Length: 542
Image (spheres, one colour):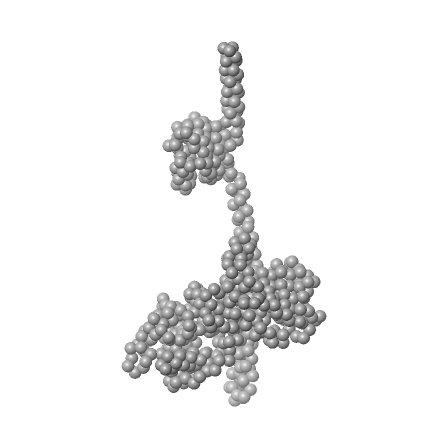
């Protein structure tokens, strides 16, 4: 028995010695950094890989605190991890260590605390970091090059179209002046009409560009698609012609959506025209369908800007020629078109895309050569729709009731020429107009009118949105409503930016009018808003 125990001890001693030798070989031959630290952060042992990687011998490391070799910017995070290791499990961290030659090397550490020591394994990832940074710089340079190419295409298209329009405007005005100067006044109108038409085309182009950039002026409200789309049947059918069959497949009890109904109508009409052109001259079928979709995080992870939630999907599909993958990849770019020169601006789909994204939705485009194209517009469900949900058509053709004499309008506009022309048009119609050039002076004018014994305030506030003076038009409108709760407000804007979008939906009695506008349209809008207020006040008094 004694001999067996002696033999077993000898065997165990041999095994321990062999295992120790094996571990020592691993310790000395490993290309990874191996280190043993005390809980105080002092290095107790290190392997030879430190000299190969960082240039330090084992005796130069022993007894020194690890932070003496650590980059200053990485020390706070390292100390935080050290404290975490003492009470928790394995942790990983990447930081920079100083080489003997004063350069810095990135080390990726895996460490674990056991007993009263911390055991760490580090790998030099400097080369990988350098390659990743170079790849990121290359990718950023590529993105910048693509961005500049897109900007070049965009500015080139804008310059071409605007120069043509400006030429028409300046030529028309110049010829009209000549006719008026020579006493041939009756001949001047046709040149002025041509100049106005060119200016209208420029305004339409600007609106499309703002739509593409998701910066157009929208008036979002709850919209019922099962009313809006059927109301467009006759218009769409007349637009696409008799060779194309129109099919509607609408979801029963379709959820209301939140968007600008007029812009949605424009989008659907543009898609119908695109489908018509794709099916010309042989004809085909245009289908408009609505469905309910509840999208979760998995559904939207590959959809730029999409968030989980309830949506109504409007699908417009045709049986036309379809698009190749290369054409499909560029279809949403501004000024990109496959139509013959002069037959398309290349802004149709990009404008729709901008409108949908600005409305909080998503646009998806699918197409197959020879089979047709399908465009899906996902618009967010409106869960708090009021009982008076309308379509765009419901806002048309409202009768303007006669308004009382000498209605007062407060006009706030910082551009002097616009303020002058607008005030003149309103005064010609019989309004009293109080003018102000910025938000604070506009608010002061309103307060003075409310205090005056000669008047009982103003009947309507017309204000630009982008006002100077620290009080923009939307803020002025809110301040005015605090003084006169039922005061109608007409916001006019060339570019509203976040002054409107950040506020969400406009309140009751607030409307938007985008610049440039026809002065006759402005006057009619003012008349309608004041008449509406007077009718409401009359009903409240009864």
